[in-house]
Image (tube, rainbow, N blue to C red; front, top):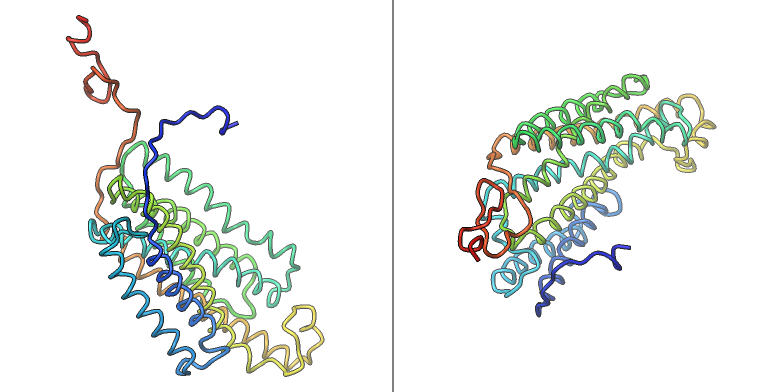
Length: 329
């Protein structure tokens, strides 16, 4: 229906694709994610594999910056980072929110199944205390922002909720009840609702219209990259805490763990809770840094978009009025 009926004025232009920028950014991101995934689990942090990936990421990013400076139509214009301080601050907020969202979505159900004894179906339903507030809070915050034009308070409050929620999740142990976990998840959901949407708005509001496409695509990039890095680092922390307490022939499936001897099972569940605690302690520290970034956001007027003013009219206080010359004609 949109293809048949939507008529949008468009002007075709010849664009030059930044192939070098695409290749270098792909290389750098791949090296970063692989290093975060393998370090501490598959390879030691000081192994040549991890050090080589780190060097490849650094060199790739340095070359990427040089290429983007010279490119006629850069993949990611560096001006979006240097033009206004709100944009890099928004990227920090998105990284933190992405880390928490993906990390909680992966490790909280595992904790609920393994330590709290929930089934796979129940552990999915038990994520609702985090997901429902995201929808409600983001909707309310969006309406308030549209009505008042104010938005800085939302990421500040949101990162406070994220820090508090992940901090409480970091205190979980083998005896933590589902009710306590759900309360912490509500705080995390409120924080995500305030932070995710507003970080995108801050980024969009801090760049020129020419760079809007690159800016908004990088919003998705940083949010997804934050999630990928968070899951990778969390996996390394979790494995280091749990692996020594798991018998060599045992499986990590929650159903298989029921067959472990009582002593081995208690040790494993304690290690599982410790690994989960380390994950959310790391997330809480990152959210605290994101709170500092939110404090430094400058609130500037929201950009307004609307239809172009017809030829022969003048725009007065947001409304188009016919000019005398046109009326006389």
